[in-house]
Image 1: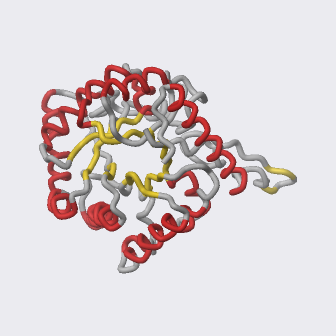
Image 2: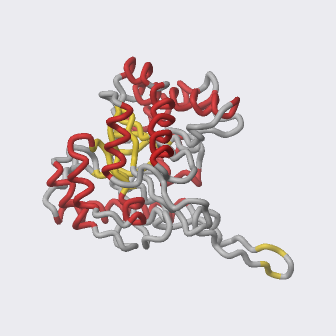
Length: 319
């Protein structure tokens, strides 16, 4: 199994993928998850005719460092929205799939979403229908490019904040499979997020095995079971033995991809905001955020954590 991590590890230091890729020099990582989650913002190059140069520059930077892209993450947005905001999100999602094809990235994770409302049988039926309605809009570009779109497990509560209902579909392996089978497209498969699963309290081993050959990617992160903290293994309560044995017994052929960008956390990163402090009437922020050099050291440690995990299970591929 090969180690990978998300380009979101350095998202605080640049919005430009090419610059972000270059920050991975010397960290040990040879494979990256191209994170486009925050690519929708005012004047974003990804949203206009600059997008091809923007993406090609990331590919060139990776080639210079002998780094490859193993998967990607689509933009953030409301699948069930309407109007101009939804149109921008849909266009950006389609563009993310085209970008994957441009860089020969085989998989892109695109979040399905719960529609809200009381989790009745009728609500479950509407969840299936409305999620399929969105993903069906991606079928033409999926067929054209051959890029796999992956849905991933969520969790009922990403943080202990008040909410109307306590369910979020899909948050178990069975629910993921139900949705994937309902969408019913050969290029629609599954990503398993260990952080979400730890919050949900599901059996990671049984879940991973149950997903079978539909499992094409993972997001490896840890937490204390209360918030989606995106910290590294050994920083929380996730049992990594259950995850690893599950991947092996599943016959998983993909990458071991971290989504643990908060091993060191900037001051205003959800869901944990650092307490602010004022001195003589002025806010002091000298130590609020993590400098680039220290973050690079953290990513190096993340690589060593992953290498240890895979080596313990005799499945670490260096290339």
